[in-house]
Image (cartoon, rainbow, N blue to C red; front, side, top):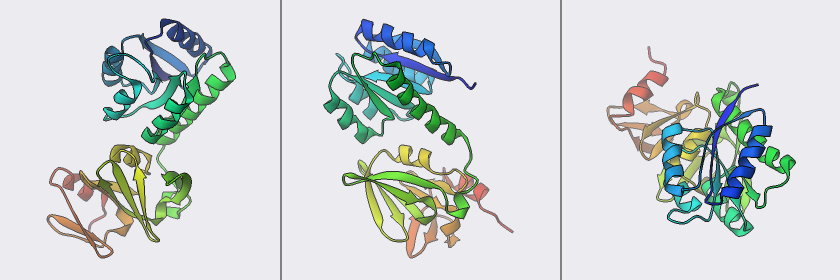
Length: 236
């Protein structure tokens, strides 16, 4: 069985012991550390690069939500909280699941873990059917989760704290980090060409020295991303 690394961050030492015990029961998990200090835990996310983080919401010095806001590369996050309202707020940061304290139900714990490992597994596997239009992702639009066929996406644009996902039919405005959206796209179908733009490779009409065209939209190409773009397209 494939092992996934994890850490736990919680200022409640008892909660950390319970999480450690539950992790030891889950054969697919390998615990790399527990942290009662939020700052140390945030540093461990950066240095250890765990697959999964069990993260408390309410902590002194640095809250779980503040840690989430400052992550540049996000592992699967399972929130641990005593108040459900904090968990619901954190879903704006695309967390995997949440567990309410006291965590006593191993089946509920395992359900959250399985969601995280399923996400990790799908993230590591190249999408072979993206070009056939059968790959879907869910996006949060207004108060709904909307299933979106990735083959309909033309390009994606950073827009402050939001991301604009442009499709054949409409533009969806999603509250999410740009990198989070990038990570959920099939790698063989999309390429980042600028700090603010990801494009569908199949939708590119033409490319010049500093821009490309998709439909009627002219999209800038950054010098740092141009080599990757040229490497991904087929040229004669």
